[in-house]
Length: 489
Figure 1: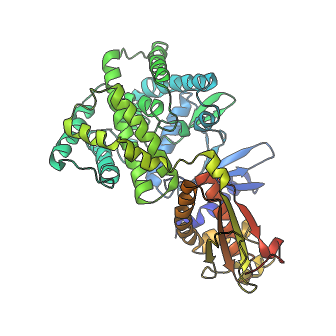
Figure 2: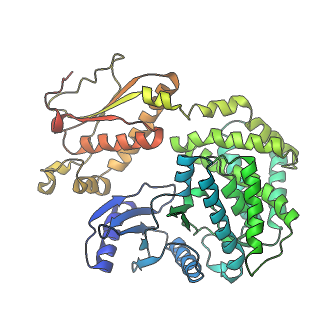
Figure 3: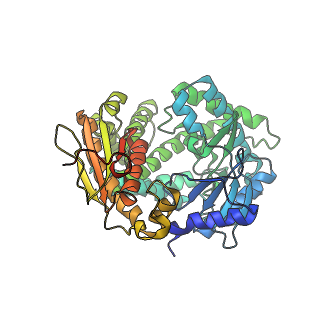
């Protein structure tokens, strides 16, 4: 069974079994880079529930264990409401839809954002020093310790997926020896405690100025400095250096207020924190390289320039790091202006995004192709007739590709998701080029037999994709449904 095609039914079934009712509404949340899929169910007019599906039972068991121990100790994490018998699906209390990352994007570096960061750090201290010694790390997912092997793996990820694709020249033997030495040195640092592993603003939910935490199933025994560096050195957040200093100091003040004061050596902690900041930057660039350079995902490509700019600022501010000559040469090569500029083109100014008009059509091949009306003579026309047609089935004949039943059919019982992935990859190339060159129009048309199901779904899907990836607001025209007299070629 394809796990990605049945998660909606499995989560809906679990919701019905637990509440003895069907949800009033169902909204599929955007997929991330993991295998996990999420749905927001409306239970009542005022109450929503999150459904989570993950085929990896081991990862789920770690999440259940961590959630239990965090909840019992009063840390703000989602309450588990129900778990399926096979432990692949579960329901969670909905903590809210707004993340700290969203608020940073909306407000910038406001005093309100700083207040939320301080609350976040106070809770992080509790994760580290109040609960760190009470966790059974043998129950961790994939790895129980942030050891030399884990650190070296992160650094190799950076080397193979970011440095090598950019064809940076280096002495391979020397660089690998340095990365191995650095991994050993970091892994030997003490004390170690619970390490969240991905402690960043996208995993912090804000509701009525209170913070809650999600996506901690990758936690393990490790360096607390790594979590703090992950939060304060998140590239897209672009916190000023004065904020980083103030918030680092706030971490120490928060430690003083808990009864389990670990009496950490502040000077040593600050040194390790700076090394972890560099390690986190390199690990993040490796992820951007894999998702962006290798897989071509625009969301990750546009994150590379800010990450490289932050790396450049770090190398200027802390010239003593890294204390390895070959690695330093590689990093200096990566932050050259011409390389940063190459990726800056993926971050398009608002005025260029507003200038580009994208028109997306659905149509029937029986009646002919639409006239897209642009001066430069066209764009793309995609034929959806190779996808299984829901219009052949009585249950869908009176519906369109905008109806949930048809959407579920196309996403779960046909190759439409695979088809749309190819469409996205193709159209994204032209959109990025048009934006960088200041073009003003692009058309994309989807045709099927009747212009009712497959083409309508594809047009709506592409519009959402371009909104998420580029901030565009395409005009969507369903010719057979809305404008049957539209001009044809």
